[in-house]
Length: 262
Image (cartoon, rainbow, N blue to C red; front, side):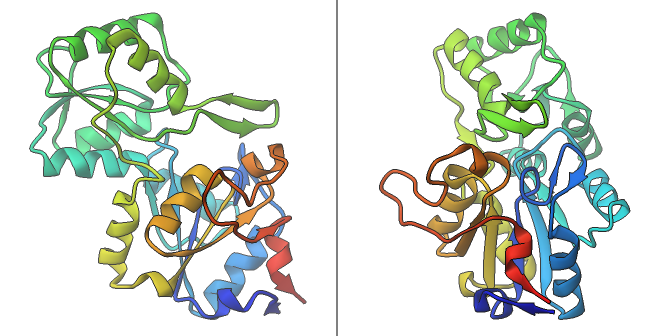
């Protein structure tokens, strides 16, 4: 098995987005297993860098492995939000988000409460209620810091695009008349810098494969990391997935199998 695109063979680490690239609603996408197996067999490291904060990274890694995807490591925007709060000495938070995000804060000794908080953390929440938005609004208006996991307005499902964390952020922006002090997920370079530090690598050593230009690709571009768009997930909803406003055009492949020649 050979990689058609020489750029892959020249790298030490391949950074994958998750939803819409490797999997979609639990289903492994075409070519993903073969490509991951090739990387493993050729001692090229892989990591999933996901904006999805709904699941714990260890849970995500376990699910990938059960699906036949030998993923070396997983980081997500939930991890990044915890890391940011620790750096800012934030010890009490209110979370608009799901159990995976709440668990990350609690296991890092950051209390998840709904009164007297240092910050409100906003991520994707498929159990979102008016009451959650009301509590978050009051806390932010009363001086709590406002931190968000990722800007993705929607995410792909078999039913079509459905609301993502960016939709929850938009609601709170409106109700509080404020913007988050930081959105830690892609395209923010916060996570890419962490990867560089952990793996002791440079930009030239890495390749980003994603499906959303304005997060996956712009974040990589900001760090001078080579990038490829796979025309699945969000990309398949767009006329020109490799183009975005005034940013440089990047290569587009139909699916991960396009990187493989048998």
